[in-house]
Image 1 (cartoon, helix red, strand yellow):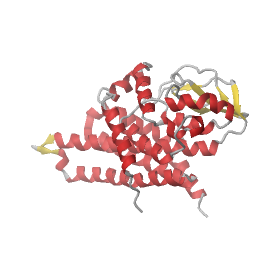
Image 2: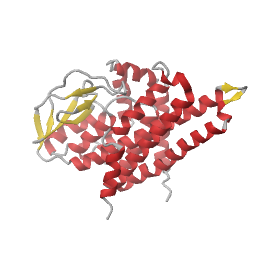
Image 3: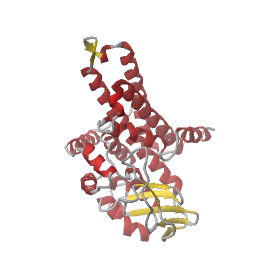
Image 4: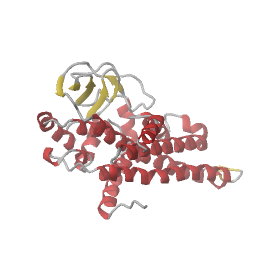
Length: 316
């Protein structure tokens, strides 16, 4: 089966790619990593104006969704450009907030980009809690609107700033739809990881075509070609799984897409690091922004082992 985007979906992806290419996202990411959010929030607003976050918000609350296929298309581009911020968490929040009162109060601002959200189980770390306006805590008694957060802790991905949310706060729902929200979180993460992997592959192919050894480009060496081909095959195998999961939105399909896309991005990251050599380790080199993101996304919202276990558990 082939999953092909229609004309409107391809145009949507192209428009996002153009917007993000002009935005100097590496510079935005580095500022975000230092806790400087001004340019990141401006970029967030432009992404929201393109309709990205509205795709996860129902039309009843000024959204365009739910439209998981278009959201997956968008998140591939966000990953391709290493956009910082609680992207998957904002989508997850939109899926968690379903009570009419809180939804009417909070969801329009998420759809418009006026607010960004983070989500975490009580006691665990929430990404970008210092930047988020809506901090949702999955507490034992239900979904709560956390009143604050503690100090920022370092993360493997410097642009993924971790905090613990303050306990307590307004109770938004007693029985939030956690399983449904997890589907959206994993789908968004899988699509973002796919974009990260594609960017790593593109950058590495360009680099080995320019770097020479023994008077020829290193990209002409058979061992290098094999390494890049393996990364390419893994990413191309993951792409239809991500799009197929966006169509079905079943737990097994989404878990399979998450495992496949994140493992493919991680493989691309390992290949990129090896083929770039020592320069790939340096934080000053832009490649590091994608390398660290691939590693962080691999375990976000379910490790590969957890996702595979969910796929096996769904088998008859």
